[in-house]
Length: 244
Length: 382
Ligand code: SF4
Figure 1 (cartoon, rainbow over the protein chains, first blue to last red):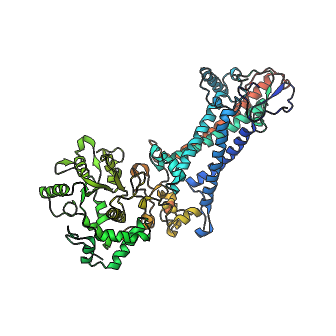
Figure 2: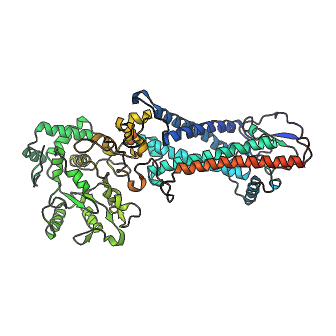
Figure 3: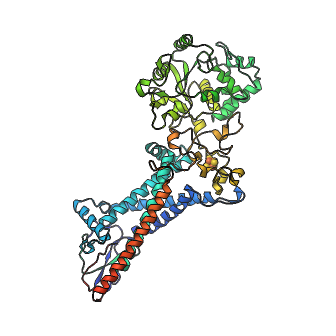
């Protein structure tokens, strides 16, 4: 691997043994892998608790003093949000110190040739001449865009979320730091609305993300999934990669 | 009970003399002063200061303008079933020029207003209810042949303080809701060269007006305000955080339709559109109609009337979230979101099925070879 800058985390010396005809490539350092799973867990928890907060689908019977269902939902929601922000800090840091698959440049496939590639990848997924599409070690342009959008959506969720969180303590840190959000969007209800509707991006993203990852693994035996577990990806030795 | 008289507080009387004449005892007056100190968040130690300032106070000059409005604010502020000492203080509102209450009419009262403004130049308090229509040179609200904009600008020029009472004066209220045909705006959009204090609400609580006036009389300045120009002592916390139904909110107990069992039990109104979580107002504490009740107490969700542009931003009043514009009320955001998510899942399943069919066909056509030795024929990107 020819990294443009020296990554902070060490690249493992010995890759796991590859089967004949394959080689293994180190893609993701452990902070990125850890961040992926922690953030994924947080987002799952945030979606479940968030939909409860947005429209409580369970009711508790009896006396109010015996229950704290919404209270717990909000507690879990806010805690998961705090952890998600912590992972975001790591991710942002890694945008500048990671290898070239992890750096900020990999989020923006907007050079002229990327556009052509994006069309080719799209056609591949539509079963139109899949053999013509080039190959990537890291993320292909379509992946890059969808992950960048995911970051933007998550960022919007964090900002709108903190803006609403600040309401309970006017004059406090969150109220004053994120006080500009509601006037910008046109009121607290619009903030709620944006926060709510953005959640669906995660639910649209998830099946596609899992399917395409598993598809690469199962169909092409390329160990995409393993790359986000131990960092290594197995690729066929006879294939050329655009981002080699 | 203290009933209003035609000329409640005369020019040269101090407030103490005035209250004494109206039959208010010293003890009651001090009680009133401590309650005002508490409302203003000053603490009980400040009560003597309030009392001292209030009793030596001579009647200030107050000019009350009514523009594009429904008079509900005036009713809320000046009329209660049992007038209190607070209402007597509000008797300071000059009856010489108050559209709803004045006896005179026509040129006589317009001249009286001009005289009052000239005599108290720089010292009077300007209270405004109602919005200012700006469309078509302001022809949608004219009084005595002059537009609301001219009147309010003239009034603010010599005012020591400008207090906008009610949602209309705050941001334009219902007449400024989309599409706002008259171009109605709040007072702060017209008077930009001095601070405008907003006593928000449709209508606002009379107690907040009283307390604001007491603050002005005691300290000679208006109370501290939030980003909306609303006095912090009243609008400093959310309805949701002071609500008597909050325990049910935290417990997960909600009214789903009006008149269900949960509604009878007094559970939280969150699911029927309560905007308490986004609304800053002292309603739960001050309450209405001499503290008889308040909307949420009576089983109606808060509609968020102290927040700017609530007719546009807080609607639909009986739903949690705004509608998706242009899709009609049936198409809620969750329906669209769920359709997209299910569509994505279905697309993925279909894609997998097509892949399976293609592979089977390919396997039938091609000789079986060892993995890893075959020339790359397929893509490999997840
Ligand atoms: S009724 Fe409204 S303000 Fe009260 S707890 Fe429920 S949501 Fe909050």
